[in-house]
Image (cartoon, rainbow, N blue to C red; front, side, top):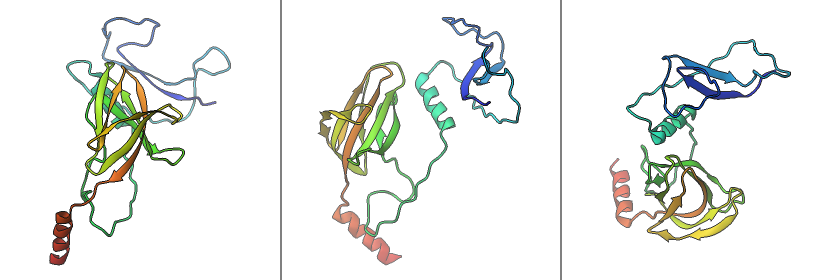
Length: 204
């Protein structure tokens, strides 16, 4: 029987049931408890077969939970791509690369951005990862946030969030996960931009 794989890694020693206040490794060895199968009842302590486990190692002068959280998510989350049909009219989104959403405080990370379950707008989930109270602004260069609500984990609207200059301000407690519903409006291309685009098309 196979059981859930865990991302439990220890540096310097195995887990001995102690929780030291300071990190003092006994060696430079990495110990991994990769499978949750070593229990005293019903489960064999060994499992056969071939398995591949990958590690990502980083170093630093001190413990930075924000950088480590971002590094871990980048290592564990594969690059995702979605195909979008080309628009016939010019738009503000560049053809090479762009950041669709900006979260200004680095201590706050965007965990989820998806369509709302009831089809009304999209859902953001933000998490504070530094263990400190934080405020952040959410906005985009390519669309305006028309309305926003703070929601429960089940996406029930709880309180409306005021929008300013097409964005919103959100406050989070230490390690809090906040769910936001938002409706958006696309940024309108200025007439000068359209003229420039038409001139470019005619000159090609």
